[in-house]
Image 1 (cartoon, rainbow, N blue to C red):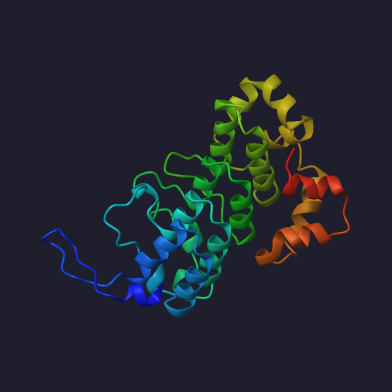
Image 2 (cartoon, rainbow, N blue to C red):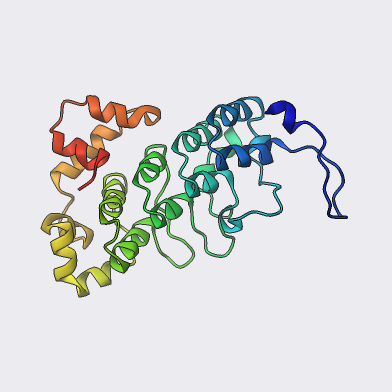
Length: 248
């Protein structure tokens, strides 16, 4: 594949000249086609160049144009982890996981917003375990607001949505929750769905439940690169493990 990448290709558009596919474009294709081995090669051989903004002109999802966003859109957990681990080894890319401008320049959403919007709990857990922050977007909506909105819109895929919320609650306190008013106004719905303790915690009427705080402390000690296997090996009740591996 690398031999193909460095061959000259022809562009029909007059403003383009014959050129090579850049490592960035190659990584984009590796993400789309889930070519894990080639993505690993590019990230090792061309660490910074492969993570530059994609040069693909016809992007099916231009609003999520970065490689991080594309990995989330196409649900590529292994490549997502490799990208994050690569950026964390490069000093000037330390904040890459929390970048907002690479997704949509006008809304300030992060990769965590996108993973919640698509209710992909595995990717939410990966992002959080590697240090993604629950930052509000330009409208003040946090990733937790995003998943609560998805739950309110429809109970379809409720198991996946509740897993995303579980992961967010373990890693991030609901400090800047914009939907707190909605939770109060629809008390019966949300308290039944969330349980009394979590509901009161999200309203800031009670401290976090002990089980939540315990799990947070445990997860902070586990390596992000092998998080799920590490959770499975923990000497804790099966019910705690299942909340991360199978959901509700």
